Length: 412
Image (cartoon, rainbow, N blue to C red; front, top):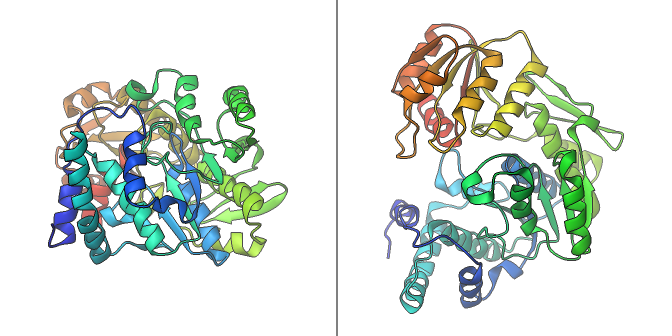
């Protein structure tokens, strides 16, 4: 048993996976042992390559403004572990996390012994989240997938609605090399006789329509092209169903994420315009086109795959196409850094290549070779940031949520 939340988190984060998940049987058995806490509240399930976290936050924020008691489960976190499990925008406390971990630990150990198995990290976190939401008597839980959808640990729920913000190229070794293959994994969260709201590109509409038809599920499509988005460094505004909305979050992609939440809840809970407006204008999502300084202009974004980087670059161009950034960049070894760097070069004055303390980090010398313009190698991330500040020119920090989270802590 554990004496502190830090001890509990250390145990959770250092569980070694025994084998790749091939079914959800283990999660189902464990939930049965725990009394199926996930059935104590209504759930909204969110999967997608990018936009899951912000869409979950928009959805939960509107529900809270309606007066509901709302849980939110997201992955990964930006600043600290507790961000994964939230009720009414309040993170699970260290004491609550410690108590639930101590409660579940002997159950996990017994299961591992009985089945000669190892319950992996993400399944343990998911179980704690489901238990916590029951303990807090939530009305709704907004649940974000960790990876994929079909075999994600969260996919044991029976949601009243599913949301898929986007499908793009990421985790191809697990999900497949075509958009259609990746989409089939995301569509795994869609249940029979339910609702799906999605912002996927139009080339996937037929696949989504056919999947939903087989499940007798109503599918609603939203395209960013139809939202009449206008962006600045202060707000993002858009039109949905001929109604004007605005949010404090930057980037045209956030208009799509917000629209997905609004559409889903307009079907499920019918929020008023005032409730939606209040939720959107009070949104905060760290590490996603986050403006942390105006002098010099400094923006953080956790985008790491080419789909996310396309959105970042296009959004910054839409705000001001004349601004060029000194880009502090690093990447993990499984990412298409060459494509990312090519796209970032469209808005780059120079690159400052660095690295992170992670065994998955890509060799910074490889990244240097991939940069086609002016570049500097500074291995210490904080020193890289200080160097960028000394240039007194706009800065964009980008590469992965892990990297942005680490540097953000040092900056703040």
